[in-house]
Length: 342
Image 1 (cartoon, rainbow, N blue to C red):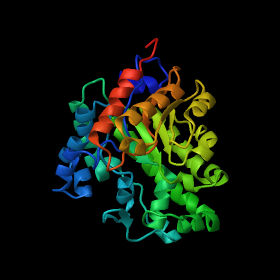
Image 2: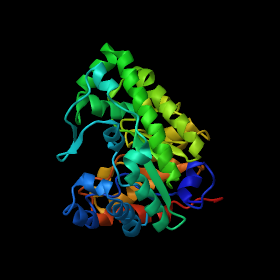
Image 3: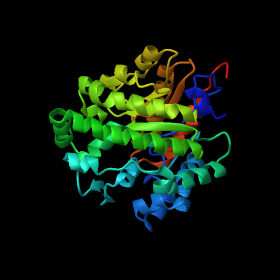
Image 4: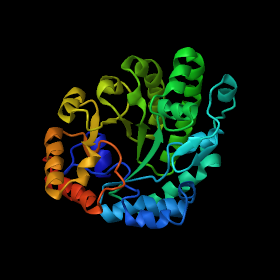
């Protein structure tokens, strides 16, 4: 069993496990060399390329987990939405009507996104047994936002208009997305993912009462639908602070928090009920080495000694991050994150 799975199950570990969101990406020269020859979607949909990119951070940084190289929007494309990257993701026909929602299908994940499962199987074969393989998907609210807005948004005006003006239509959209995700993420687990992380990247745009009314019920249904796969589930919410109490009702094994949420308080609130992952500000890695070491040490101190903690960033790795800084984070966690009783 891997350190990551043991920590997520709140079992004692000899040291804190460490991996980083967006650890496979543009800060790595090895990634850039592949990206220069292939567009993003081609990389995701070509298992040999996706496998290589997934494995790069394990070789370069020595992290305790590999996270699948893919994108949270891949299941939406399989539902019938026309996805492009130019370079940001875009749906050229945003969903705005009942006919649009009715036109979405709930696809078979193996038939429609079999390349994802092929990548997972190849990565698992290549990884040493002690390194965990993390699969992932987007949360229903975040994916619905992409479909309705059509692209990255600052104000979320269109999706909130549907949510408030046509709540039943919006709930139907969320239900279809959740049905798709349950199938897709269970297929990831069947293909070798030992942990599933759910990214609710845009939930921080919601007032707590709206998160509770719209986002949380479908997140709970999604997590509940994944339990048959017997893999720990991590829920990440960007802007988690005001929503933390509600996130704790998600049924997830662990909550991944950003740097704006106090780690010690989060650990205290969860107690022995849930694991916590996080929460170094990724911009710290742009600073000098002594600062990086000091900040990593501070995160570990706030995490405490109790079981159920995973070191990670509070958001994804920034493209300008020096590789040496990323490696320093991993090395510092391994040096300072020793625990008694593991």
